[in-house]
Each structure stands twice: as C-alpha cells, then as structure tokens.
Length: 208
Image (cartoon, rainbow, N blue to C red; front, side, top):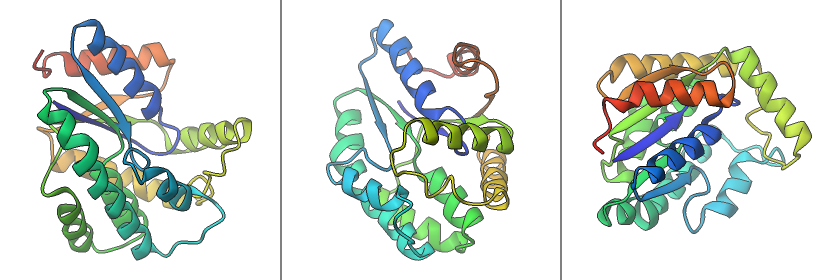
C-alpha cells in the first residue's frame, strides 16, 4: 500500500509517519518511509531551495520544482519500493501541492493537476491521512520547533496566517472530494494519543 500523510505546518506528520512505520514493521510489513521534498536522490538540494527562507521563489517556479523532485521520487523511490512488495509511507505528496500551490498560492487547479499528473504518471496514494489541527496552534508549534532547531527551512512558516488558513481550507476540500482515499484524524494531543487515533482510523482499511 501507498499511504501519505498531509496537514498544515506543525501538524505532526513526520512523527506519525515514523510511529505507523514502526507499528507496521512489528506486524511483519516491510515498509519504506520517505518524504517530500527530499525523498529522491536530488531531493536534498531541491529541498534546500524550496524550504529555505533565503530564496524568494515565484509560485510557478515553486510548483515546477516540487514537480521535478516528485518525478524523481516516484521513479527512483516510490514505484521501485511498491514493485518490491513494500509499503510506502510518505510525509507529503500531491495533496500538499494542491493545498499549497492551488489554494495557498492561487495557481489555477487545472494547471496544478496537469503538472502533478506529468510528474507522477498518475500514481496516487491508496490512503491519505489528513492530520487536522487548529491552524494557529500548528503554526505556533512549527515556528517554535524551527526556533529550537534552526535549519533554515522556515520559508513556509514565515507566511502569514491567512495563507495557512487557505492551505487548511484546501485540505478540507480535498478530503471532501476524495472520501474513499482520505482519512481525517484530529491531531491535537500527545504523539501517542494521535498515533492511537491514526491506527484506529486506518485499521479497518489496511490490507495486512
């Protein structure tokens, strides 16, 4: 299975990908954990450009850079892992592009979908976990995290609250559009509490 985790900045995606990966391994499921941007062989340099607050990338360039990294990611990492019979858990994928570049940046949805389809060859997740958390709380947590571990990856955290609210609205709209694929999980609480909700939400839909 190909499972993606989505949500606004600071929603806890990375932690929950790791927790689910461990849970699946304990059940004998060989699992590849990856992320976007940064999961492909060219991911590290592109991630440094896309997330660094040193660069002011225009919206369409941003869209195309994400697509270039995703094309490599799908070709070099995701499809090979699925072909080996592994499960793939990915921290962000195409719905992030839809939410951030279409809803957040205002690029026409048709353009975003065209670029995404070209990059992925039509590969969509089997399931997508949307971690729902109040935008103000999540953004505060993300900014606090960046302050404790300065990585230079604060470009999106520096966007104003209005931008992040548009992104959150995009995610909610996408979940309504794709109820068979999306699983929405309330993500306030401890890591363990949220992980329990994720497992409860997914358990009946996992082909173990």
